[in-house]
Each structure stands twice: as C-alpha cells, then as structure tokens.
Length: 168
Image (cartoon, rainbow, N blue to C red; front, side, top):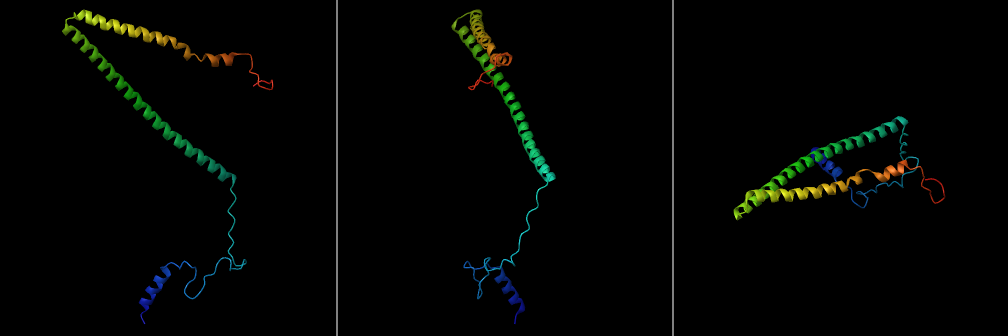
C-alpha cells in the first residue's frame, strides 16, 4: 500500500469543489434547516458605538474632506497661475502681431507712394479713435461695479412685506 499516493489523492479530493447538487459521495450534506436551533452558533451582537468613537469618526471625516479641499485648492491655485501666465503670453504675442501688422501697413503705404509721416499719422489717428471708444465704453460700465441694488436694500428702512402681511 502506497501511503504517499493515498495522501496526495486524499488532498486532491479535499481541494476539489463539492458537486452543485449539494450531495457528496454517499452522504447528504446537512443544511442549516436540519440543524436544531439549540446547536446553531449564535453571533454576538456588535458592540455599541461610544461617544469617543463617534467623535473620532467625525474628526476623521472632516480631516478627509479638509485634505480633499486642500488638494483641490492647491490644484486650482496652480491652474490659475498657469492661466494667468498663458494669458500674459498670449497678450504679448497679440500685441507683437498687431505692431508687426501696423508696421507692414505703414511700409506698404510708403511703398505705394504715401509719405511716411502721413501713413504714421493715419495709424495714430485710427488708434486714438479706437482708444476713445473703448474708454467711453469702460466709463459706461462703471455703475455696474457699485452694487447699487444691494446697498439700497441694506440701507433701506422699509421691510419687504410677505403675503401674510408680516416682515420677511
């Protein structure tokens, strides 16, 4: 008799999954309903949470949320800095392109036969007119920065009346 062979074969049988019908070779497996209630293992009830555990859980939740807020604030600040740097770069490139365009127009006008002083004067006059209209538009929008409606409601002595006649 080969003891090693029987041991290996026995361990293979133990490692194999049970048949899906729930029955093993020659014997039926006991189900939970066949076990008498007195022999069933009762689970101990989970411990009741304490105030210290509750405070620790709240602290952990706030710490996690604050850490998330901190990471997102850092990311937003870094993104804002990059956006500002890119905007400054774009503005510089735009101004450079504009100056090259105006210079090319002046050179083109001079090559056609216009005196260079006249071409420069026309470019300056067009730019001055554009500045005038932009400053005028800016001055028209100044009143939008004063929060007039909010100040009016905060300094008003009249209260808004609700539907029932009481103050809101």
